[in-house]
Length: 197
Image 1 (cartoon, rainbow, N blue to C red):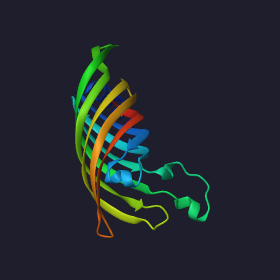
Image 2 (tube, helix red, strand yellow; image 1 turned 180 degrees about the vertical axis):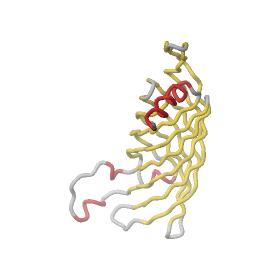
Image 3 (spheres, rainbow, N blue to C red; image 1 turned 135 degrees about the vertical axis):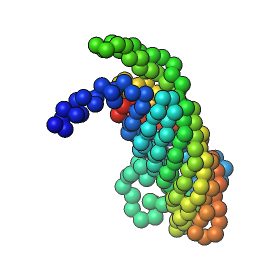
Image 4 (cartoon, one colour; image 1 turned 90 degrees about the vertical axis):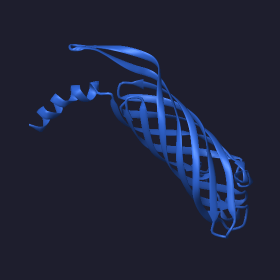
């Protein structure tokens, strides 16, 4: 019975102007301002959940940024010879999707127009936390709020998609030693999506 309900609901889901998808991306980030004292830039990985209604998108994601993403063997003091900035970020994006290219899909009950190439513009609040080290000295931890903006070019193929995203986050960290770290982090990401796009 459950299978019959699912099969009956699939056409309604497929033709609805809503979507839900998971996304994963990998790229690089540059550090500006006080962040550049610890690192010029690092690798970045993101994982997110997106919900779309018409051309309005809500994306909730988490990211990991740091040189530790490229692990290598080292011993003793050689492991911490340079300054580092390893941090994670939780973000919420409110985006507007602009269709650029459509594909017409023919079904028995009519034609469904699917935007296969879209531009998403948006941004939202951030919360970041991480460890900051200055060469051979011990690291100090901190966290704080931020704000980000981005532009994403996405190619959507029904349930699988790919995207290229450029953006920048502005961050403020309150460290445990009483100091603060402020800076911006422009980035570029490439990744994939799976779900109802």
